[in-house]
Structures are given as structure tokens and as C-alpha cells.
Image (cartoon, rainbow, N blue to C red; front, side, top):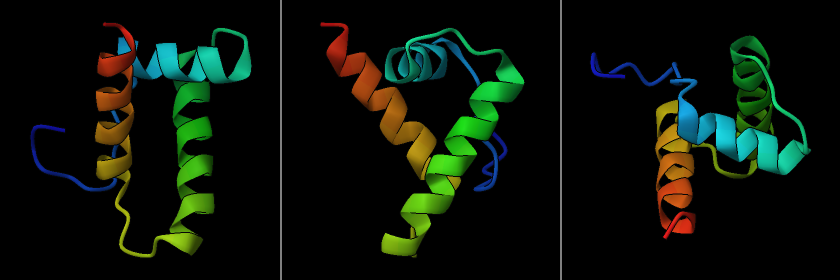
Length: 68
């Protein structure tokens, strides 16, 4: 993430919280990455300029706001 790559996500606690809430179970890091990449592929059709890093950040922001 810090190197500026648009094709990676960071499977951190925010991502874990987001995926476990959405799916109703805890995922390991590999599963989290696959789920988010799958969502990205679906969204990319409707939002062709979307980048994986932007989706990661949007999830992070959403999770930050829902914790308040």
C-alpha cells in the first residue's frame, strides 16, 4: 500500500471486519483477498476506472465511520 501499487490490498483489521460482517464468518487473509478481488472484478464492469487500492481505501473509510 505504501509503495503506491494500485493492484494490492492490505488484509488488515478493517478488511477483516468488513468481510466478516458481510459474510457472517471470519475469513483468513487469503480468503479476504479473494473476496475483495472478486467484488472488485464485479464492480470494475460498472466502474471501469476503479482501482483495487481505491476499493481497499473505501472499505477502510467505511469501517472507520461505522465504528463511531
